[in-house]
Length: 45
Image 1 (cartoon, one colour):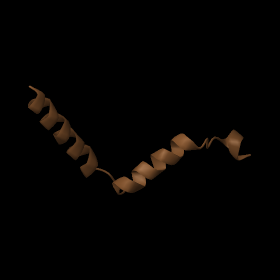
Image 2 (image 1 turned 120 degrees about the horizontal axis):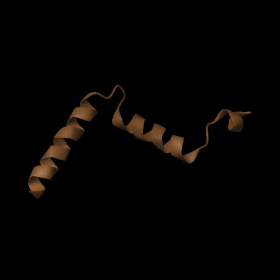
Image 3 (image 1 turned 90 degrees about the horizontal axis):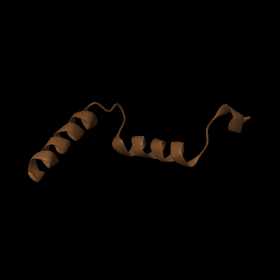
């Protein structure tokens, strides 16, 4: 049962990664910056 879940998750992850428009390291950097820095208009002013 554990192997079935693992293969199901890997298959779903492959489908998601195939549809990305940008490389994975660029996406992870953007997410890291989004979490680390507040980017609302109030903070930019």
